[in-house]
Image 1 (cartoon, rainbow, N blue to C red):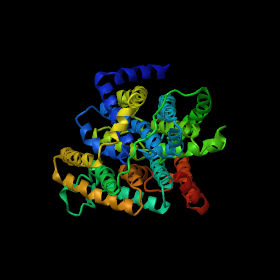
Image 2: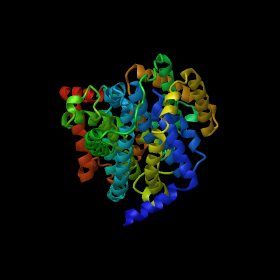
Image 3: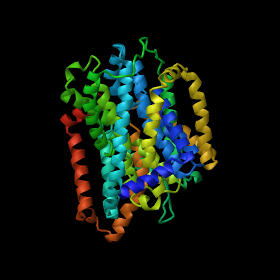
Image 4: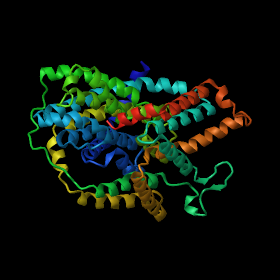
Length: 499
């Protein structure tokens, strides 16, 4: 009964004119950047962080959340029509969706994607509403040692589930933690790693790092890639599914919803891992598995449901524990901290309007996205024809203005440019920057809980293994790291992430 009352309160917050408007803006922007290949939600949210400063925290997070799950919807449009995934989690959708389009069933593929995404998103929202308060009550029993071990586990799993070498991913996590510690030590007042630069005394700007390493670096990479957009020659066709297609797609949507809801909670997991996992599962268990490779509707229904369910449930560790499950959630943590809000188990009590308003807005956003995506397919196809040479100068100007506006300091603009170069080099060296961002956010929090734990134990490090929760987290992290360092399992992981 409490959940129903809390959801009613949340809908009251989410249905205010301002919040509905920003949810719609987020859904539209998310769909658009999902449609435009090579941008993605991480780059977009990092670019839009500065405009959230003048808005209430609840409104800002509702908009950013809309961008995130809106991108999951939009990415499927180009994946199906052009064989060009607009978002990484839509890579799998190209495998069967584009073949359906070539067979004259583009409308059915788009409808399957939209309806499956809506169902999965709605179920996942209920899951978030039900499990969030429960996990929050459990989290309140955590001590400093438990929090440190939980955050360490999150960093380990984010490194293990990253693409490519585990050693490289761990190195990126360590670099992110080191960058997060730049600035003035709160307890001693001593400056660390500032190299005598006064502007670094307050630490590295989260906005500069995120905008540079994800936003501008992505623009540079896109300029290297020759544009090869070719609009689908065949007609989109009817958006209605046949009875046989309904019969085949429904079980896949249900399986994808369950799998995505679980994988979305895992640190380092998220929509991309869920969509890949769902596709591999459908190839093995669906009745239409013999049709895979020729345009099987199960290969669209399952992954699209999974990536949207994962996008919703990845908010659970953020809202209940203050721990980001992926790079987008790390940006959300940064946005909350900039707003003066510390995400974690106290958020339900301290910020009930934000907690329940965000959950209610997810369902509202899913309804908006269902309405936006199907009737506006023609408009999104036209958007794909805008030359990128007209888009990127406007984005760069916006980045420079946004970076400067945070602290009214030109040093942040220079920092953004420097991190853009670093992000570009990381890409060339096949170093994934997402674990770095998670390390950057969690590093200062880990240091704080480590110090508290050591003070409580009077310097005895055995406190981390004496407390059952902490010991369990450390054991899981050690097993996960050891398992992924084994050659056979590492090859399996790379094959899964490569689709």
